[in-house]
Image 1 (tube, helix red, strand yellow):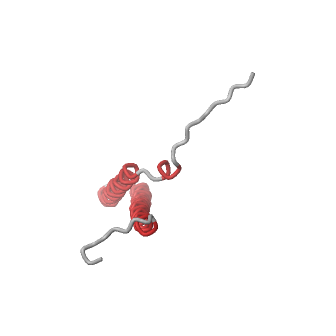
Image 2: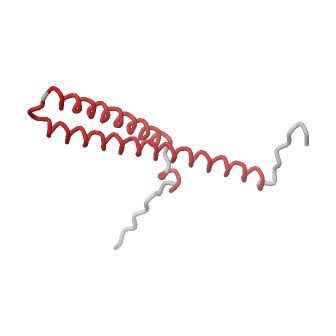
Image 3: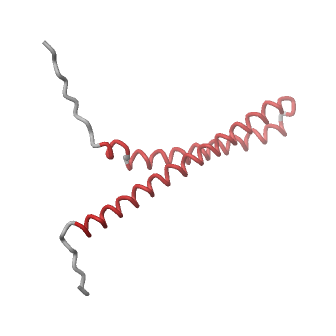
Length: 109
C-alpha cells in the first residue's frame, strides 16, 4: 500500500521576498563593512607599530579591506532588491486599480 504525502507549499513570491529578512541582511552587510573597515585601519596601524610583522599586517589589512568592499557591495545589492520589490508592488497596485473595473474617483472626476 502506498502512502501519498501532501506538502503544503508557500506562495513562491512570499518565500522569495521577505522584507524583514532583506532589511536585516542589508543592515548586517553594513555592520560587516564597518567592522572590516575598522579592522583594515587597525592592521594599517599595526604595520607602523610592529615592523617585525609588517608583511602579515599588510596582508590582513588587504583582506579586511576586500571584505569591507564585498560587504558594502552586498548591502547595496540588498538595498536595490528592496527598492525593486517596492517598485513592483506600486506598479501592481496601479495596474490593479486600472483594470479592476473599479475606478477610484477624485474630486475632479
